[in-house]
Figure 1 (cartoon, helix red, strand yellow):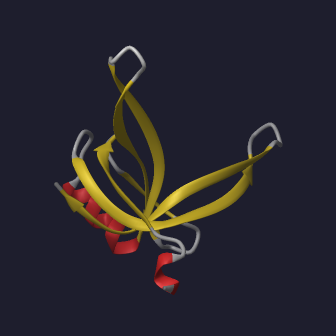
Figure 2: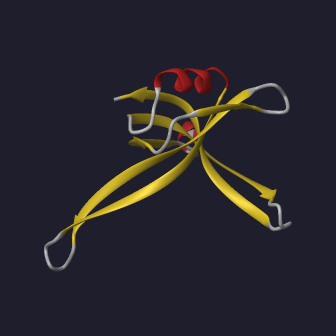
Figure 3: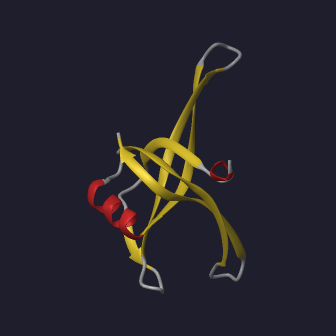
Length: 108
């Protein structure tokens, strides 16, 4: 059961082309966003679409492979875990970020 503690699975569409960058330690990473859609009917019976954007990051060979084969609009399935970190912006304000750290993916 320990493997179920922090696991995320998403199916959605890429919001932009993937861009790979290098970290200070020399490891490559890719930041991307995935849109997932849910549908429901409101009280009037109208179909409503709700889109949620998920910030994601991939590291190393996963980032390089995603950069080669993925492009904006692709439908993608991914599995990973939630990660949290903070940084200080240009105005000195502390910002908090939650991302899905991608462990594996598949184009659909």
